[in-house]
Length: 301
Ligand SMILES: NC(=O)c1ccc[n+]([C@@H]2O[C@H](COP(=O)([O-])OP(=O)(O)OC[C@H]3O[C@@H](n4cnc5c(N)ncnc54)[C@H](OP(=O)(O)O)[C@@H]3O)[C@@H](O)[C@H]2O)c1
Image (tube, rainbow, N blue to C red; front, side, top):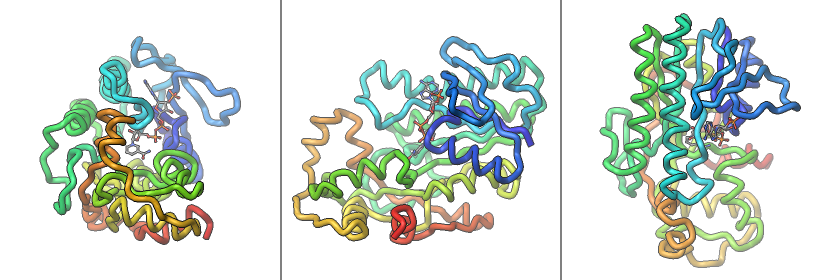
């Protein structure tokens, strides 16, 4: 099957490209900058300027939409938030228009979404896919992102959305940021430490996308999280244990994180549990369902 991945140059996209190629699929990526070292077929696009390589969509049966300006990279200024928003929402809208205009017989559109759908709040509630979207900025972003994906239903193709938790890999993303201070011997929990950090091992997330592409999982919305919940405090302790480093400092106070990161601190300081039951009920088997085992595998322990 010919599959096109937006944001295919990113943390998830690179590994997903390899997994899909290993499964025998023909993969191409959409990128804003060609990488001369890349071995995958690349097509240029610029969703802001509504530009796309004329050949990019030819023969494509599935699109995996991973493009998105990193939510945790820079302070959320108005300009940055617009970029975060348009890189996910306007880009999907642009693809929809192109697929429609070029009459591409697309079979499936699979979009990333995020557990931000459930909002930035700490509670003991376990959110399932049935839960309403939260009334905050992350909820609004996820809603717009998912609605942009849903447009593809009009074109007669299936649509799936993966509300992704924190993706665990040592190649980038949250984990290296968490382990850096721990390795330096100055690690500590954030804020109350009681906030949950729904997570998924990168290999399991790629397996979810692959099974959606291959229709082994029925199309729909799924929480892309592992079955085991863990709080920030327990994950920090676990990382220190696995990496054989001491934890002796008090928690980083919430006000300090807000001072450093501004509004973005909310994603560090809040989090509830998110259910993986729908994936399991649909026959998905996690390779890394438990946090300790996932962390040990990542660090080769
Ligand atoms: N990693 C996580 O823990 C996590 C958790 C929840 C949800 N997600 C979601 O999963 C998706 C992929 O995540 P990732 O970790 O692989 O992200 P990533 O490493 O930051 O890669 C995202 C890709 O999006 C493209 N991109 C960045 N800014 C863009 C812009 N302004 N306009 C258009 N494209 C842009 C880039 O591709 P080019 O530079 O090649 O164009 C980049 O390689 C994102 O939508 C993210 O929000 C990730």
